[in-house]
Length: 217
Image (cartoon, rainbow, N blue to C red):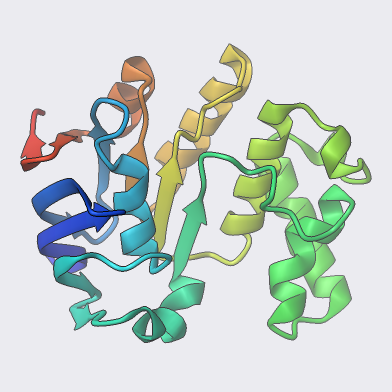
């Protein structure tokens, strides 16, 4: 099966501190995998490396069989990668929910009416259509995470990189996110401390430590 993500002996250091070594990972087309590990082991950094936001110290990063040797190599694949950070408070670019969810499509040149229609569809899919006209920074933390996810899904990326996607969500919202993500046929790498959540979503689970990445399920 074709691989969407292929990491070969990736290592990462920051401020002269070694964070992890020898991370090798293959994520097949439409496969969902989860990464767990103690705080400080570099789970979020690993997602950022795959997303092309920071560079690895050594090793190879391949997306769709194409090597990303430097950050500028990710430029042509940005639309194919949906990255949800752990902290979404600085993620938003527009004041209202509907404007922000539409933003990526409008930036790509899509007509306003068509972008609005697609934004309404994804908000409905996520169960938050009633928030359409709300000011984003007046929403709860959980609501903001769902809106951030909507802004990612609207561009239909082939890869989703999700860092603690259920952080600050109540049980009802978490169950809705699980239902949505399970219905989406995309390659996913999910970082989470929430054992029940990842077991319901990702058949394959890895543990990250400074020695590398080891499959535990």
